[in-house]
Length: 165
Image 1 (cartoon, rainbow, N blue to C red):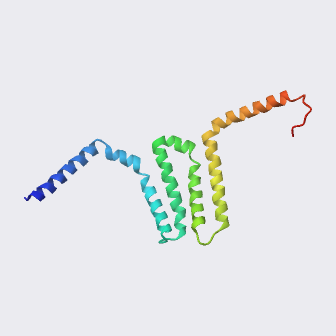
Image 2: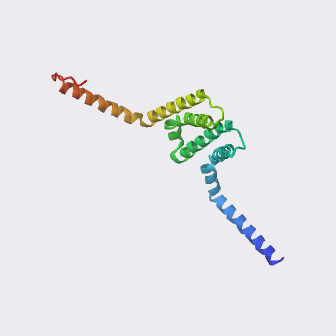
Image 3: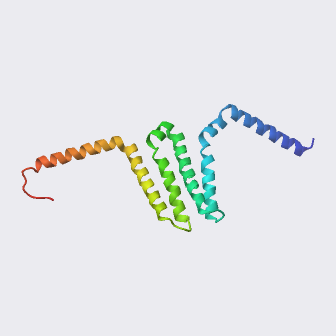
C-alpha cells in the first residue's frame, strides 16, 4: 500500500470513528431535533431567489413566504417550547399567509387589489390576535387601571362646572 493510500485510509477510518462517537453522544439526534425547520426554510429561500432572478413566476412567492414564516415559527417552538408556540403564537400562522399574499401582490406583474386587501386584513387580524394572546393578561390590568383613573377623574371633577369636552 502506498503512503497516499495509507493516508486516505487513515483519514477515512478516523472520520468514521469520530462520526460513530458523535452519534453515540447524541449530537446527530440533537441536530435533527433542532434543525429540522431548515427543511422548510431552505425551499422558501430558494423559491424567493428563483422568483427574484426571473427563473420562476411570482405565484411561487405565496408558498415561499408561508414556508419562511412557518420555519421561523418552528425555530421559536424549538427554542421557547411548543406549548408557548401553540398557546401564544398561533396567530402568527395567519401572518405567514398574509406575508405570502403580500409578496405575491408586490411582485406580480398584474396587480389585484383584492389580494392586497386580503393580505392587509389577514395581517391586521394576525397582529391583533397575536397582541391579544401575548398581552391579554397585561391588557386586563391596563383596562382596570384606565377604568380606575377614569372613575377617580369623574369623582374629583363632579362639582366642576367647566366643560372640558
